[in-house]
Image (cartoon, rainbow, N blue to C red; front, side, top):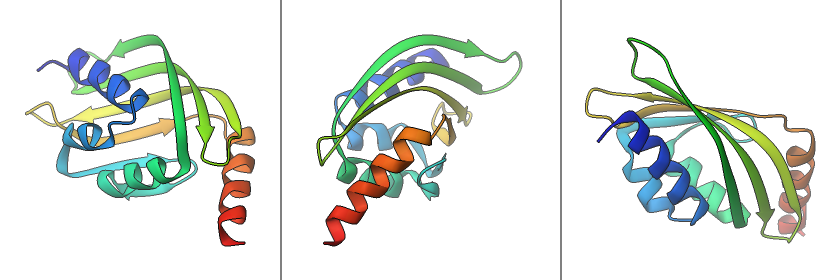
Amino acid sequence: MTKEQVAHDYLSFLEKGKMDKVVDLFAKNGCVESPLYGVLPAVDFYKDLANDTMASILKFDGLFFEKNTNRVSLLFEYIWKLKEGEKVQFKVVDIIELNTEFKIEKLTIIYDTVKSRAALEKLRKNRMQ
């Protein structure tokens, strides 16, 4: 597998809601750092994301490589429909750090949380009622 294949598989599995396949792309100790969910083991992050998500549409916008590293960055538009039906849309940069076996050790997610944070807080508040 190549860095490019890992990145494209990641986006494809994420959009299709195949969280088990996304998690399979990670090393056993792989983690995700997200503005909304914090730092979590990959299995926990994708479980939480699946619990909050009704549907996802991802529009690929670019793939960027760093020379002499195992890092690759993805740029995409994310249309996120939450379980309560609210939809938010934003640009995302995912920085993927791979080990020597091309498994993801760390995924850092970067995006503006202004709209998504409010929508997620509303979803969580409604669940508690």
